[in-house]
Length: 492
Image 1 (cartoon, rainbow, N blue to C red):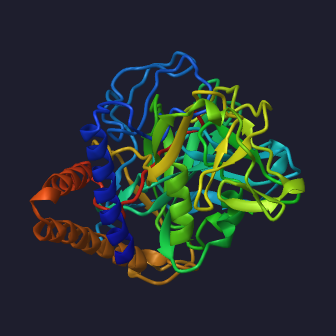
Image 2 (cartoon, one colour):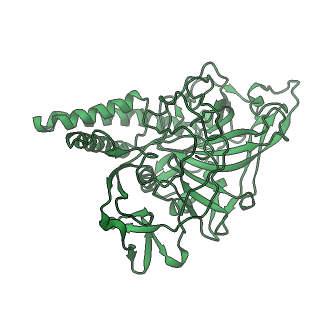
Image 3 (tube, rainbow, N blue to C red):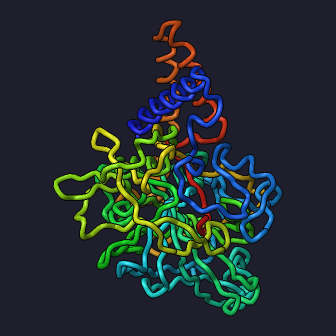
């Protein structure tokens, strides 16, 4: 854990130095591009109000989505994410009989029915209904999707099991939810839809429920992430069709211990629609540092310059007859077929994206063995290079006296600190990770201050810039595992 924070302390200083260099060079605007704002983005423009994560959502004051729905991000009183209570604090226990039940299968790709998107706000995986067989059941009185938060065992409630259909999942880095002020390197959100026909209290478009899974650092790669990472586009506005025969074991992306915290909340991106039922699993799954770095690069900050006329014709990068795309190699015959995102179908939050096919993307060599996904270059087209890990997450919101319930796994003694799952699991491990996060933040601050004391006058401006960036991060509430940040929705 501590190693990650030393890395991020250095990254913070490097980013500050880059920003200062831009200012000294006279580039007051447009030198460093946030994820989602890059000049080389191929994402389609819609009538929706533009937004980014520059202020972690604190500037999402007014706007509309592509359907004209107004934002409620700063006016709602049941917003997400939350700083969840520490598991040692008393929490209202939900009846075990009313727990949500997850039974996932594998998402099986036939070469065209499963896509991995870089939509400029997140990395998202979505699939055709035929690609996944699953059964996710939530408990309700038959009214609203959040009924279970007010139901008690042995009462007079009519208990109804309602099917929730998984639509897509995406990631945020750092995590959006915190546990007692501590964050994780990554958080995954699986978005589910409940039809009005199954739950009359839902609007005609249905209701949504989200399952949040924390990811904690581990030494080895998590094989459950391999297929996703293999097909992850690095350029905004692109998607990859997963190869035929490839699969994602969705069940393996959930921990064995299904203890979770539940509350009524919202989408974590504009329009921040409220009325969602949230499940935040308390046991993280593993992710390696290499996997984390690749994700943070895909959502990284970019330095963009106007491409010269010579860039109009660029050779494809090759490596022994194998094309290099998104930093990995594969046989040309198995090319991922990167496509442009040129059409979007609206749903709540992160939109589901219509996979309209467009031009093939040509890989362009950028030196040092690196490859940038690039559509055929034209004279003057911007050329962008990732210069810092990115972030894409929203600041925590006020709880406003909401009901927050803990539902424990039937075979788990997690509240007593037992190790109830595989890998990093159980409440005891979560508490240990929380404390390690705080310790690492202190180490990071000491490291930055130590560097400041050791430099001469010539480097003072750079150190002050680094301190300013670090303080801004800390003030923004990012007391956790630093690196990057992300959010919750159904696909923009």
